[in-house]
Length: 358
Image (cartoon, rainbow, N blue to C red):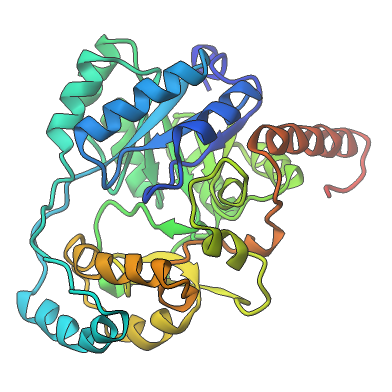
């Protein structure tokens, strides 16, 4: 990775931008202050809401940070399939005494307006999920001094990221919690994603871009492993979700290590796009029938998820989590960065001495 980019964060640790109120300014600030790269998630926020969080973060730290944007999605959903799914969810709405959301509440997540804000008020790093921005967008961000990162889940997607002129690619393995950042949503490929270590190796041989590895990383030894495989840094989401500064619902944090939730699955149940979460009642009952329709299904189920959280019912919430969720540690975010850095150093020492990685 270019020294200009790595100089932004002393430790090769990036806090993943988790949308939905998890990646709040105090979490990003704590990570930045500890030597990692903290991120705000602009997804599902208005441009004004994003800007307010940027101002809050800047009041908490003078360290570099990042902001993540969702790419606008093409219109290909089948309205009839959405209607059928809405009918199926009628019982959930009745149970939680909530109205289903409007599936036509917006498709582009305020993308262009957010870009304008980020060009007029530059931040150190901007990352993109669900696709590759145009070369013009990347060049415009470069002109104001912003580094650009883009998620890729396959070598072909990494090629698109390189063609767009991005500074680094975030290689997201199938182990990752939350939404898979696939550039195209192809239902026929559901569940066929590439594991992280294999993906890092394949992308390293495909493009010359620096790689940030993401997916199921919970320990410093795993960071050492992805660095040894060719990554320049590791991005962790679920590990930071459980921290004190995380904005995640308390039920969500508790569920990560609750023995009631023993595994994760990729599902379209909550948003219409593949996302990895803890298997609960809602996922089991509705996942097999959810159509490929993002963000329509996200809008449709949003009131149900909020009502479930208000009722204290984790069985009706979207409990996004990576495959290593049970390894979550309830530590302050800054302390977690320090612990991970210590584990990474120990793993590197063990490797250099011929020992194993822990």
